[in-house]
Length: 89
Image (cartoon, rainbow, N blue to C red):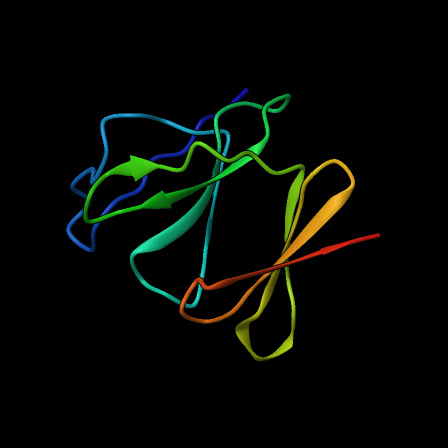
């Protein structure tokens, strides 16, 4: 299994950790990361190098740079400023 790193334009690692997947968001400082194929998605705040405690089944990009973050039976709609709006199914 190949792991990926977050790099700057000069090829310098921005984090020491490797991930199974890293997906960008509209905010250049926020990323959706997954540690391995069986782990859940977490939000990475790059300037602080902090990963959210909340874990999601998946992050789905929507139109106009909104994202739907799926928990088990709850979905969180996140706007461009990473503000959250919860709703249940």
